[in-house]
Image 1 (tube, rainbow, N blue to C red):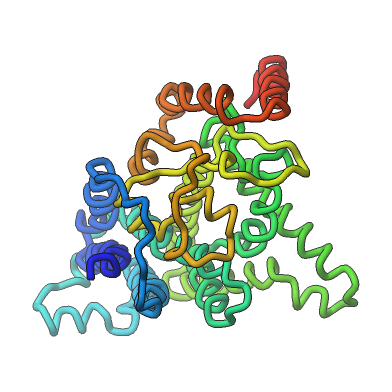
Image 2 (cartoon, rainbow, N blue to C red):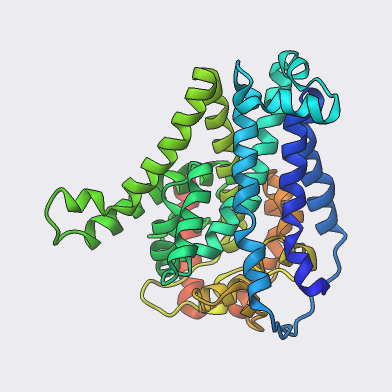
Length: 383
C-alpha cells in the first residue's frame, strides 16, 4: 500500500500552504516551512530508493495521485487571491469564522509585508511541487487529451506558458548542447542560469511553434500557437488576481510566479549541470544526473531517474528506473536545492563528480568539448 500512498504526499504540502493563507499572519509562512522542514529535511535523511522497479497492478491509483492535485491547486489559488483581496472573496472569511470561530478577516486585515512575502513563497512552493512538476509528467503524455488539459491548467496557475513546448520538444532533443537553454554550463551560477534559461526557453518555444505552424495561414497560425495559448491561459489567471485585489494582488501573484520559476530552474540546473553532448549524437544515460533518494522519488514522481526519463520521455513515471551508466548526485534532488542556491558551495560539491564524469563517462569528443568550453569561459570570464 505504501508503494502507492507515497506519491500522495504532495497533497499535504498544498494543504499546509492553504491552511497558512487562511490563518494569516505568521501562519502565511506555513507552506514554506513545511517544505523546508518536511520536504528538504526529509530528503536529507532519506534512505536510498529500491533500484528494482515495483510491479504496480493498479495504475489508475497512481494516475489519481497526479489528477487529484488539480482541485487542491485551484482552491489554493482562490485562497491566495482571497488573502490579497479587500473584499471577502466568495465569503471565505465569513464561512471560516462560522465553522471554526476563527476571525480570518481580522487576521487578514493585520497582514504585513513580511506576511505577504511568506504567503507568496508558500504559494510558489506548492505550485512548483504540485503544479509544475505534475504538469511536467502529464504534458509528456502527448496523446492523452485529459493529461494535456490538466497539465495546461496547472501551468496557467504557475504563469508558465513555455514548458509544454520548450521542454517536451526542445530540451528533450537538444539537451547537453549549446542550443539547449535548459542545460546549465560549467561555472555558471544558478541565478544567471535562471535568467538565461527563462528567456532562452521563450525563444526556443516560439521557434518550435513558428516552424510547426509555418504552412498555416493567419489567423490559424496564431490561434493554434501553443505558446500564445499558454500565455493567454496564464493571462486569464493573472486577470482574475487583478479583479480580486487590484494591482497589489496581481503584483504578489507575479512575485510568487517568479519564485516558483526559480525553483523549477534550480531543478533544471542540477539535472544536467556541466554535462555536455556533441550535437547530433545520441542522448545517453551519462547526460543527466540521477539521484537515489527515496524521498525525492516519491515527492517528484520519479523525476530523479532522470537519465531514464530522457531515454524514454513518454514512459509514465511508475515505469522509470535506474540507469547503470548515469552519473549520480550525492544527495536527493530536494536536499540538493539549498546547495544549488549557494553557487560557491555547489561548485565545491559538484567538482569531484564532474571530474569523475570527465575521466570515466565522457567520450573523447565530449572531453574535447569540455576543454574547449572551459577555455572559452576562462577567456571571456563567463560561465
